[in-house]
Image 1 (tube, helix red, strand yellow):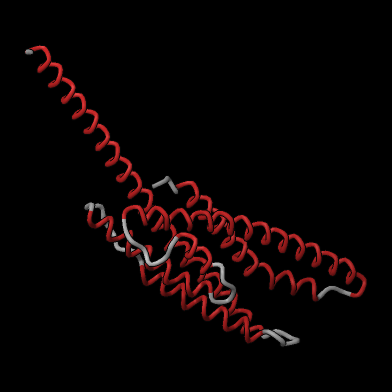
Image 2 (cartoon, rainbow, N blue to C red; image 1 turned 45 degrees about the vertical axis):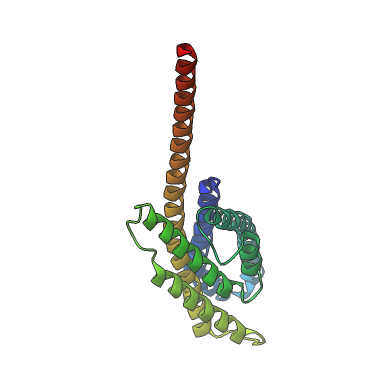
Length: 230
């Protein structure tokens, strides 16, 4: 069992960065587009240039953040499942969990079952050790799945349309923000429990090692005393 704290914290950081970027885009994109669309003919070229620059900056920034999050999250997921399999039995192997999560279009649905299984196994382990203080917020995970499905449906409905629907775009943006926010809640709870479980597991192994050393020394001392008597 290895410490997975740093991986989880990095994944959470980039997840929050994605959330903030979407919030900024959600609140700023409409006003900016309205201002630039109302530009006069004399300033049309400048407004188009500004819109292009803002779009490029946002796209490149989001691409970088998504890539960083993907790398950190996959690394965390693999190690999280591997750690659980040291102290419990999971339905998915570390590599299986990673591969299923990365499947396009349906990966998030499969990840729901993976994450739910991880949370249940973790909860059982903590309950066995008397560490369980709060239950995993499963309703948030279910809400994340429903929001993800709804967002995906809206995205597929928008494919092939020449002009987007403002209502659909608004709902899609709201569901995206809600989806990320709900998963952040679930992920934050899980990695906090993961850290506590790892610390207790490490402490237990340390105590066992100390007890073994003490027993070995007692055996050596008893053997020395026996030799002295002989």
